[in-house]
Image 1 (cartoon, rainbow, N blue to C red):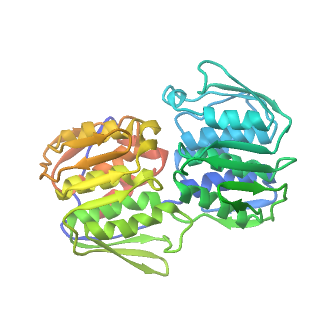
Image 2 (tube, rainbow, N blue to C red):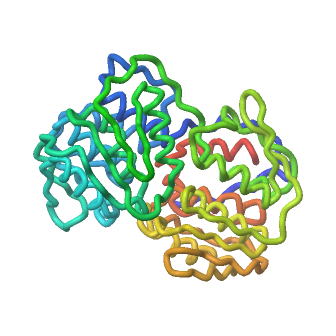
Length: 401
């Protein structure tokens, strides 16, 4: 499907949505299972997201060339896994993936003893992994670029002969995702010692067992945005936990300012409309995947907003800062961009009526803009991009129309 006129949601929302399993949790669990041995670990409720399915297939592939396509987490986790498993491979990726930096992770792996070459451009895929013989346990790298680099190293650390002593320099970005990694390791019985910005992991064996993945808080943001824009009824999102391993759980607290209340029940969370503030400001350094959703929602509500902590948005599936600026301009919303750090929305009222939203091969662009259908007709180009993280999104959208 090349484009989709988004069906308008019901005037008063009343739906129960099953919610997808967490892609972030699933990908971490898959790496740990692959290193521990599939016969020792059973995983329940794995995400059906394309990225997760791709990672699962690549981890059992015996091909020389491993193509993670446009999946950033898959590429970075797979690279570290190939090193830990001493599995020679050529890791390629889509044209966009070959523009996204991986040098910080590769150089850290080299410091540990990995033999890796850049096939084309220094610091980017394709990568040729020849093998691994650990020569050091100490490694240092920047913590402000991508938490995925940090998580990739931590996930393999227990399975290395000498373990790892990892020191992060500078500010640590997306810290909740690192915490999620550490907590998943703990579930497997793998201990991480922290002292300041140094993480020490000794060689350890995981505890065999059955482990369940929880529902995806990252996906919940689109339904919170819809409730904020519609302002009527209720939505129940199944199997989301108040006390979650996922950093994006913070979105529920932030959406209070945009007029959405959350009532946690045994099997999920119930969203209802509530009073909202006249302006919005938040730091997205640790929940960067929510920045698009909040920017679009604030534009739809017509309230002034300042979103900060956005440096990683430039190197996502697309340049998300530029994409948001371009697409919101179609609705009459001017977005002031301050370097790579902030987006400022003036709060002018937007008009939704027939605009066509480009998605830039970015799943989150499609889902972040869909809730604007509560205000008028719009068309999403290449709606199938949602398969990357939320394959059933449009099916679930049908439940609110």
